Length: 189
Image (cartoon, rainbow, N blue to C red):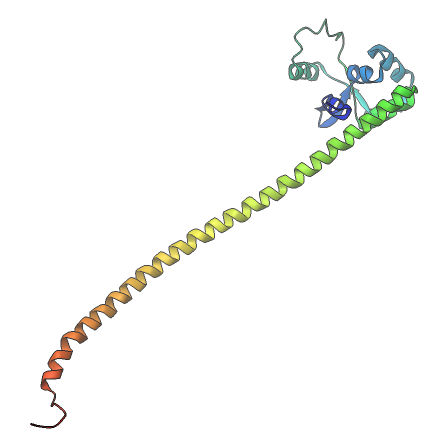
C-alpha cells in the first residue's frame, strides 16, 4: 500500500466531516499522542471548533466498533480522542515544525485531495448513471407503447385483410356467372 492509501484509511467521517484522529496523526508525525495534544493545547487559538473537536462517548464507541477495538485499555484510550478536520491537520504542520511533520502534512493534504477528487468523480459517475437509467426507463416505456400500438395496428390490418379476402372471394364467385351470360366475341363458325 502506498503512503496516500495508508493515510486515507485513517480518515473517518464523523459529524458529517472527514477527520483524522489524534492517535493516528501522532503516529504519522512520529510523536506520542500526548505530545501532539500538548502542542495543540499550547496553540489553542490556532484550532477553532471547525478545525478540531473531541469525540463524544457515543462517537468514540461507534469509531471503536468500526475498527474492531475489543480492549480500549491496551489501545491507550483513556479519554475520547480529538478529531482534526483537513484545516486542523494543516494547522498541525505549523505547530509541529519538524521536517517529518512538514513531509507528513504534505502527504496528508495529498490524501485529502485524492479523497475529495475520488468522491467528486464518483458523484459525477453516479449522476450520469442515474441519467442513463432514467433514459433507459423512458425508452422501455416507449418501446412498450410502440409494441401495443403495433398490436393494435396488426389487429386492424388483420381485419382489413380479412375484409379484402372476403371481397375477393365474393368477386371470384360472381365472375364465372358473368362470363356465361356475356356474348362471346369473335368469328362464328
